[in-house]
Length: 269
Image (cartoon, rainbow, N blue to C red; front, side, top):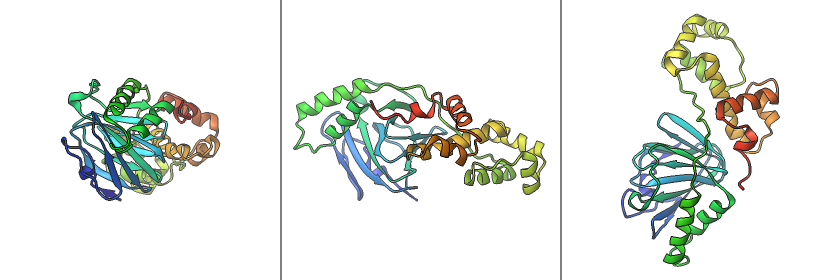
């Protein structure tokens, strides 16, 4: 399911709201709040303002520049003005976005950046979400300044598992998306889709830039993230996405993402 988010997000100095969403502004930062159901997406669009996309509840996903970010409440994504993206939820979520007018924002990041959401930043976002009549201009300006001071990118690697173009390799990829724990070899998949293992191997490399094994690892990590964010244990997630032991899964997660699951999904400080 998807919906067009453009009418709910800032394209100029004026803001409009739509059913299910609300926006509050008045300074250099505008806050928008939108409820999202599981699997619901705002269609691909861009803003005239920089956006900090964050979900205080639920798990947010953002697709942009050929990558997908899965964001628990401990992480937000900075999306520069003009970058086309789509935003959705892997579980019921409240999307709370901050929009920064470029001519009043000191940050000049040209690419999306993952930003940790500390306890202080979480409280400040809620503070700025108050109505203009509740939060005066001076108080709003002070809070905005602190928010900008708290935005620092963290080094995490985006998990990517694009679908290959070859229709036979795509059938394999789609089957693995439905069941990441399926451990059939390329020879076994080839017998199912009518291609040799070598043909499928070439199709994955040419279509995704990764070997079949690398791609499957990325897919399994991508499938694991919403489960971990929802509170499932590392042990149960490891088995569900195809790892024989929690330690093997943690090692793969650390190699693929840059940090272990416990650090990625750690409670905000």
